[in-house]
Amino acid sequence: MAPLKKNFTIFLKGLIMGIAGVIPGVSAGTMALILGIYKRIIDSLSRIDFKFVFYFLKGDFKKGCKNFKNIDFELFIPLFLGIGLAILVMADVIYFFLQNFTALTHGFFFGLILASAILLYIKERCVLAKNILFSIIGFLLAFLFVGMPELRFGHSLFIVFLSGVVAVCATILPGISGAFVLLLLNQYEYLLGVLRELRFLEIFIFCIGGLISVLFFSRAINYLLNKYRAPTIYFLIGMMLGALRLSYQEIINANSQILLVLISAGFGFLIIFIIEKRIIRYESAV
Image 1: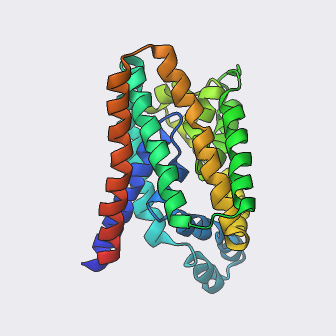
Image 2 (image 1 turned 45 degrees about the horizontal axis):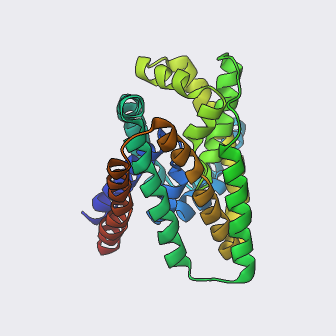
């Protein structure tokens, strides 16, 4: 039963990451970092080299199978099942709440992100001047990025492909929301429609772009986490805090009752610590 419980835990984490992935301003990478699975994902992705394809084509099935087994399927199968299911189910839900309860929804996002940054800071406990400097740099980059004006592109298959490359690349970085990048590129609502209507060609093209992005970009992130862990984590914390500008702007523009927004933010804040306490402890128990 232990392997089944571990797989189910990974599946639940995939669900949480998938939900975060469709929320502009909330990073699936942040959720992975909070849930304690980020390093394993990046490390596993960076080890995929697709040499098994060439071995199979040459007829060397022994080497091909050996290389193929290096892929962490125990992680990827339940994780991506959870992510995929969450994205398909939550696309309509998130769209509804963003359209009808904008301020409350972004207040909830604000609480999620703020609690995530605080929790990471508590876990890291390596407060040095250079690390604080990296946090400031990360904060400024994210703050300026989310303040950029919306760009206008069409919705051709090539643009969908590039959207997959850029959005998934952003998703790998905690603090940068892939959904927000799509919003910035004027592709977010279009791709939500693609998901709701199950237009498989566009979904496939987007996924191909994302796959190419994640396989190459994960190697750089894995190197930084192995060689410069503390500065990298503090840089990412800064990016998470800087990304709060998006939710703040949406709350101000919505002109809603501040008390309700604060309650929503507090609820989001508490959820992160509940997730950290329940799910991660459950994983350690099995």
